[in-house]
Length: 117
Image (cartoon, rainbow, N blue to C red; front, side, top):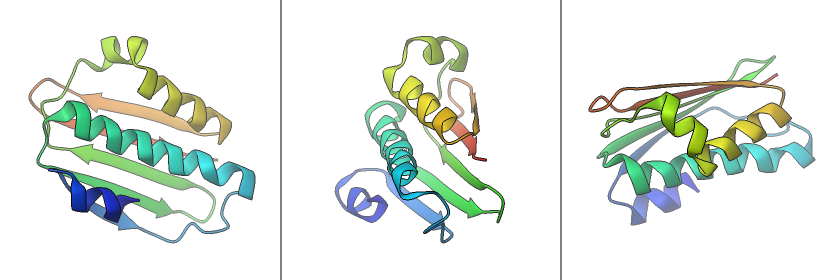
């Protein structure tokens, strides 16, 4: 998905992806896919960034997903309350037994850090 979007978007998306195949039960794998899909969609639609990094790390006991971009940033507290995309990501993270944090300031880009199990 990351490669496909990179070819068609105006944003350069740099994937740094470790193998997480079979880490999650099959019925949970779709949640990881949708988290990444929604994050990329938000970057393309809202960030005005030229570059983004999607880093997925297999820590043996957990998976970490770090999503960052060099876009315009946003007020994270206000957007979390009203964003369907971010609330959908948050719900999927909860299903995976994880936590999520967002760091963003206007004019400084965004960082979403997701840790599971």
